[in-house]
Length: 431
Image 1: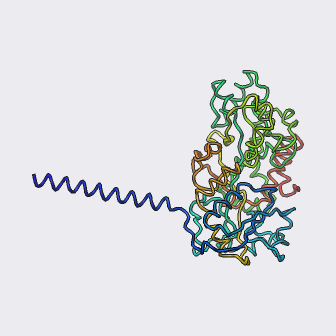
Image 2: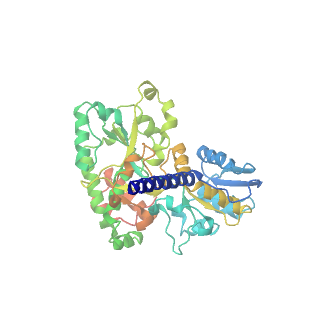
Image 3: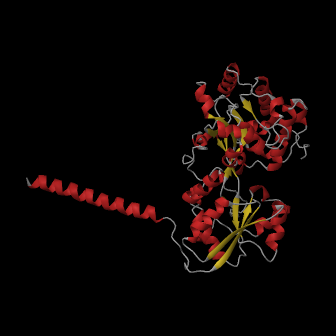
């Protein structure tokens, strides 16, 4: 009897301790951001960028003001941002926080945007960098971190889920499935199962479909990356598999280029054409996806016949689709800010899973955090195996090298060049 009582007491004590531990864990997890400065601090923080408006960021300002009600935070648009940010940072009214881009790093023209940036990797700042996917964090030569992603971007296609459900078809996950699905939609009377912007090389359907595939062919080949970045005369051969793939893509009848040529741009026009409701798949970038919500009310076709849609990778190989993971907008802190402590405090508040996801959801862009499941629009990218997640930030392909691919695939896709001609012209393509 005594033994049974001891066992019972032991079990009860264990449960009690577990409950206490759980309660403590809940308290810790619910704490969230804890202010580190005087809450009565009165100051002005300016964030500079190129957006006309930044409502999602302003919502974060409001949330931050719950902790620091006397801190005035303002977003300021800088016209011709890429060319003017250096001059603005060197001026008397320099912002405390400013938008930055990975492609600016290492370029003399944008040296000021890096030189003025505080090292955000400094542990003393307390930023939760672990909440961000490590492959989109900029790798610098000296190990410092001048900028941190607040949004990410990728390439893929908008999918009309209602059409797939209506016709009893599944969203393709391999290249052969993509071809089969396009054929099936055509047999069911859909003239253009897959569309995309095709008038210019930048963000054309050729780039959107083949760039992730191309990265899959060179990402793990250091010698290839070195030659591509150096415009080595032989580097064009690394493009050949991708150029052959785009030709196959066109020959397999996946798209009607004449119909695609009617789309004026890869943003507003692509979205409104997709909202007509008769296109099962529309290639675009994450930037384009961010504009869909606001344009639902501008499409009479969508208002009359609304449907659900998501953004998924384009499967260009039999192994499956690649997730080309790239930073979109990044923030830097001006190390010469007169309110540096509060600027860092705002960054510490913002760089968390919760706040970054909230801002991304409000803006309609992909979050840079490790959790993509919270947003059904981008959830499919979270299901891509790690081995097929590729980031230029990690393997080091430069924007200048990417420009060569974009131009080459556009010339081949539109029939202006043969594959051999495009390969031979690597390094000679200009904007």
